[in-house]
Image 1 (cartoon, rainbow, N blue to C red):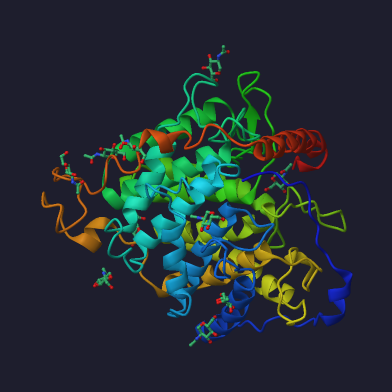
Image 2 (cartoon, helix red, strand yellow; image 1 turned 90 degrees about the vertical axis):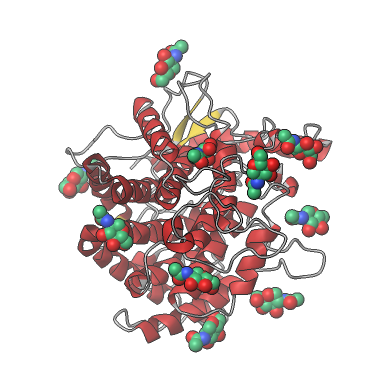
Length: 476
Ligand SMILES: *[C@@H]1O[C@H](CO)[C@@H](O)[C@H](O)[C@H]1NC(C)=O
Ligand SMILES: *[C@@H]1O[C@H](CO)[C@@H](O)[C@H](O)[C@H]1NC(C)=O
Ligand SMILES: *[C@@H]1O[C@H](CO)[C@@H](O)[C@H](O)[C@H]1NC(C)=O
Ligand SMILES: *[C@@H]1O[C@H](CO)[C@@H](O)[C@H](O)[C@H]1NC(C)=O
Ligand SMILES: *[C@@H]1O[C@H](CO)[C@@H](O)[C@H](O)[C@H]1NC(C)=O
Ligand SMILES: *[C@@H]1O[C@H](CO)[C@@H](O)[C@H](O)[C@H]1NC(C)=O
Ligand SMILES: *[C@@H]1O[C@H](CO)[C@@H](O)[C@H](O)[C@H]1NC(C)=O
Ligand SMILES: *[C@@H]1O[C@H](CO)[C@@H](O)[C@H](O)[C@H]1NC(C)=O
Ligand SMILES: *[C@@H]1O[C@H](CO)[C@@H](O)[C@H](O)[C@H]1NC(C)=O
Ligand SMILES: *[C@@H]1O[C@H](CO)[C@@H](O)[C@H](O)[C@H]1NC(C)=O
């Protein structure tokens, strides 16, 4: 993703339409959750313009970047799955395919001026979700399973692992010309970790466990994770650091989605390996995650000061709570003993979110700050994503947890025509070389036009401003 500065879009004019009730939500009733979710889903899809003539299928309206579309389709996939409602499934399906790029690894030619490792990963994570939920197979003319897309994404990201700076880690950006190429961050590395953990459990391929260890250890070594700052069970995940200075100038901002990426990753690894260290890490991450709740209500603490402070969340940041909710759901599925600890927070958050969904001309547009128990005047794709993901998470127990390749395809065989084993080996499932065309690991086009260069220059300036202003308000 790119940094776009802060785009507060509160429109006072809409306030006159706000009702204080919000969408009706009885969290104990699946029917009620379904009804509330349908309204919020429709609101989310109001931002979908990819089906207008001349537009790119799968894309939402500007200013929402490509990465957020990848997140939104994951939200919509869960909406259909948990509510047994296939209304949007074909659109989710065609979007996940259309944007997958020439090598089905979400290196999408049109996105060379916006696509970072994290952007690519969020699409890959939605493909992983499709695999785990047995979503309608890609179909004729495409790789046989969604696993291909997820593994191809992971393979190309892992190939960018950079030992030359900071002792390892992914850079934020893929392309040299995008601002953030000189920065290493937790979202990119957290995505690599998260996807590795899910691929490990899904494919039974131990390479992914080894990589999970390596990414975790590196993140700890550069202090992107921990050390505990408030008691022993308090593992924080920070934003990242510039490569200049060998990643020692830490940018200590904490985001819900980073905490969620790491929590769910640990949960998958504990589920798959049974190794208690992943459970301990998960519990410590959850200990720190308390900073993202106020009276049990989730909020984006780094850019949303409570008690009347100015909200500074940009368009990207305004969807993070949704991603966090979804990953808390996965955490509970993978580590059922944490259900009783986490679910109460989802419930209070969902109820407050529903109260916030009382704005706009339709009367059920969702807001950003749920702690105010009414619509706060903000609206957008991120606000819809956050509410819907939180509602979806209420329903996780109603459906099978994430499937594995073994459950879906049967025992591994050497016959690549009957399942998706790694072509000839019979111990694991998967596609070892998926996506690894050298031209997609780094860049498809090296000569960018002047307009893009100018754009990148402006972005660099924005990053610098962000870093300077940031420290004043982002430290928790
Ligand atoms: C299915 O979803 C659509 C779109 O959200 C909604 O209009 C419809 O009422 C839903 N159907 C059921 C049975 O909930
Ligand atoms: C595009 O999809 C949205 C969401 O499903 C729908 O509301 C809209 O009518 C569609 N537009 C066209 C041109 O098909
Ligand atoms: C890429 O951009 C072209 C031109 O705008 C558009 O026609 C095409 O659908 C886009 N492809 C993808 C995969 O976004
Ligand atoms: C850079 O940081 C890494 C990781 O902390 C460390 O292993 C390496 O020795 C450092 N290099 C220099 C030149 O300081
Ligand atoms: C430290 O933890 C305690 C107990 O969980 C909490 O009340 C306090 O606010 C925390 N302090 C900081 C600085 O996070
Ligand atoms: C792993 O996840 C499955 C699915 O939710 C669950 O049934 C099982 O108990 C989990 N295993 C462990 C060790 O937590
Ligand atoms: C997965 O979906 C396919 C196609 O709909 C179906 O035949 C199969 O039974 C499903 N697998 C499981 C484990 O539900
Ligand atoms: C299997 O491997 C052979 C030899 O490396 C290769 O030619 C073939 O394309 C592979 N098939 C699949 C389905 O990956
Ligand atoms: C395991 O996954 C890795 C990463 O995708 C791949 O390189 C390797 O070939 C896989 N191993 C097997 C036995 O398929
Ligand atoms: C990578 O893709 C390019 C362009 O499609 C193709 O010419 C080249 O042969 C591919 N390389 C590999 C190793 O598959």
